[in-house]
Length: 263
Length: 302
Image 1 (cartoon, one colour):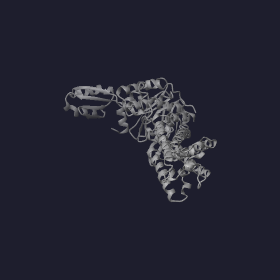
Image 2 (image 1 turned 30 degrees about the vertical axis):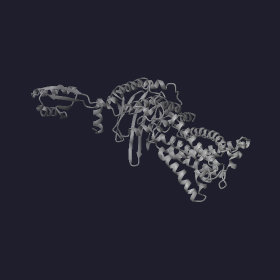
Image 3 (image 1 turned 90 degrees about the horizontal axis):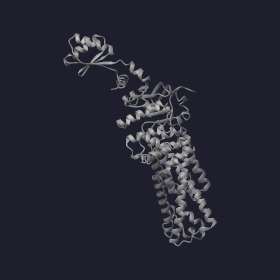
Image 4 (image 1 turned 180 degrees about the vertical axis):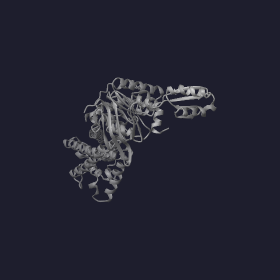
């Protein structure tokens, strides 16, 4: 298992992937944080889906982690793309056969891949967290928002809580990407279906059909990142989303184990 | 189970839907030999190799690799190096990084990577990205990857694809060297002249069926040699053909020569008969059929 993780990390460390991930994470975090603070007085809203997060809310001890939590959905999409591409490319490059000759246990390959990608997600979320905190201070200064409550123990606890929740959500999106990668065996198909599903299908249906968001993994993972909402509790969102993902992962794992590697 | 054989396949079949990709294959490959695996496109070579490497499951039958059942590939794959259906690597990684990924995965040391790259003449391109490699260089990297585990069995699918004549010669020398040091080499190739030059053993497939397996020398020896007779005067071709047939051998006219089935002893008999009939032969050459001739005759391909 350790050998698989070492091999996967060697692939994940390649400059093209790490640099593009840093760029994507910086862009997503920068965009969400800047909009949150710079549009704080805008009647159009400054949060997700046009919600308004006022100066007073940002000045609370929990204000420091809001931009980071709000980035979770987009960070999740980045993770989905990476996990899906890293899994499906083994089929398109034909490298899966090399991997299986060197490590015949398909479950070890799968679990090793998952663990290494989770490690990659930890780095990704950490970068995002650091960036969100730094930018929050910068933009708070620009917009004259008080940061006095941000250095309290309560604020530190909120940051830690936010980090854990965003990490859980991001990894959840990544697992969703991995499931699609194993299912479709093509990075383009897996990524496009994943993104369309999360950003368009889930988003639209949840807007038009009341309570449908309670059953969509993407929507539930966003709730996890937010630490729960008035409508959906944190525990429900966590167990339901990960329940779906576990079932999906088990199904594709069986498929991966049984399927002939004929390409 | 212990076995002196590197490969032992019994009644192995693979069916995809209604199509039999491999049908009741039986063959053995002794340890330390170079075995050529030949057959037309779609004859089941790659399917067989994939089953031997645990990538696809047989429909029926059994097989043993280095004495272990193919149902338990984890027992023998650490001692097997393979390149299947061409080299497949990560384009964004360098040659060296690609080999390092496989070395780490297999739990092998990464130190010999440079040595392997030197061996396949990629020593100075190890730090270039795989996507910048030519077909021949990709092929060489594939061979280097197959050699990573210092294998007891090397399985190579078309290893000389894309290589220039000098490269082919180098690979041939390398394979011979590996076999001499005890490595069994199981190599599929379309270059039958290459296979003939290096193979001690041969497994020949046609439409998913094994039509020959055994020593290369036995296969070639079993083929009747031919005599190529060229009359000085082209108008004597038909008469010469008739004389050869009357002597009891199969003869056919091919352009400006008569090709007669028969061994060296028959050539003197034919020469005398032609002379008696007033036909002067400008050349009379006994020719042993090549593997390519034999292959085409046995597979019905041309």
